[in-house]
Length: 286
Image: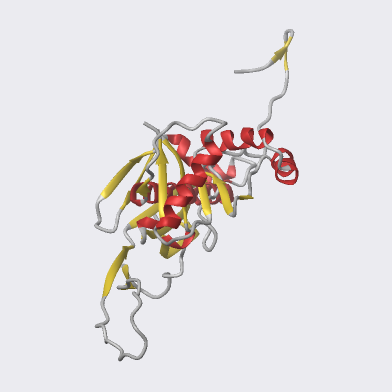
């Protein structure tokens, strides 16, 4: 539709800059919020040994050792989650547009695949974590104490926690609660940045992808799981308990043989598993 100023038709043009799309922020960071130490080598699945262990009870001094047979369990991390995006860019389209369609299409495909990988990893964490005892809906006044209580559940099982993964609504409660306590340095940092960062000895992460309501992933039994995020508030866990392993990842621009133009293609193959559910506690409200 033409543009007129009064009765005069004025010139029009298309910008050579593309408007940026919105993508959820990265949440799964190896060594910080997940573990990728099982990556490496050609394999469609990775078995992790877990040695059987129990607490030693005391006996009287001056006695012989009693030998125990070595036992273990095998935990399978199946690399069965494949993420793909391929976009066609016809040569005639690229020639008629100032914007660099090839590079922009590849960048968009990378973001889309990365977003899918993040969503599936979080779905695995929520699905396979142990449910917390408390199911009370959090408020500004109770949010901090609820996290501490859930952390205590992990400690009682002999573990430690170093990450709190929050739904956006719960993260907002923590930011609001920061102003109600006398913690000058901590409160000032939260107010200035809008980030919780490290608090109570744990890294706090806002998982915006949980706002989409649900996500899917294939578990280690090769079953497709659809995980509902609706009532999930937060997950307290040890990052080493969540495996996010990849065995293939590529991004490429290739000339097409079927048409004059190219394809922007991105592919990632990954596997997810909570190896120790006792180290992960998910809080949901009824």
